[in-house]
View 1 (tube, rainbow, N blue to C red):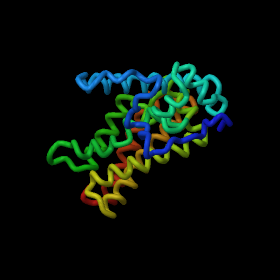
View 2 (cartoon, helix red, strand yellow):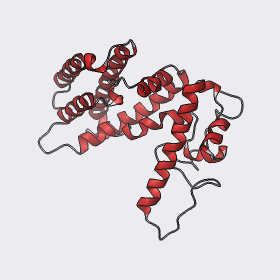
View 3 (cartoon, rainbow, N blue to C red):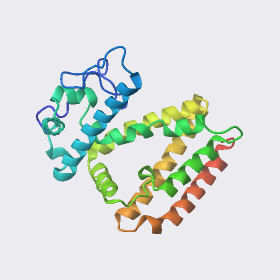
View 4 (cartoon, rainbow, N blue to C red):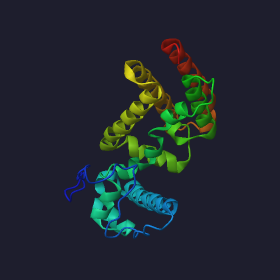
Length: 237
């Protein structure tokens, strides 16, 4: 990291996690007041959150993650550095913000599945749907902007290390949705690991130059195989 405080992480007792939204700061959007629409206020926070992240990623793609100080990101977003850290507790979260909405995705799929559908079947169908939609989280997306983002992410050790925190929290949320306890934890660990391996294999082939359409049939076959192996090993799921 740079020597200007880029490595600073704010005290979690006073500042939110990256996916929980910012608190108003000296250069934040002003508080609309107690009688304002809370939905509008939340949308404004999310929009500002996204704008700061996009400004940061553009700089990181142009210059490299470790070559861009946080102060430069703050200047590009037209906010102060302390305000930036109110939105993003660590520099890495400026990039990994895109994963925040996926953190409890598997748990939401399980909790919201239709009656009579087993958890593993719901997760399998959701992953296959993601492949069909070329959801970047499945690794099956060859849009240049997505490829550039993945190169930035997987080519920066500090980002990969922090990504494990998102995966761990995803695992914990899924374990709870599966009923908790050792059984839930074991099932969640296997499911999250399988999804990660499938996505990384898709990304590896696309990064090597194969178009997403050419990889798609193999990606579907690999997913079907993986979930069948999970089903035989996890029994009730």
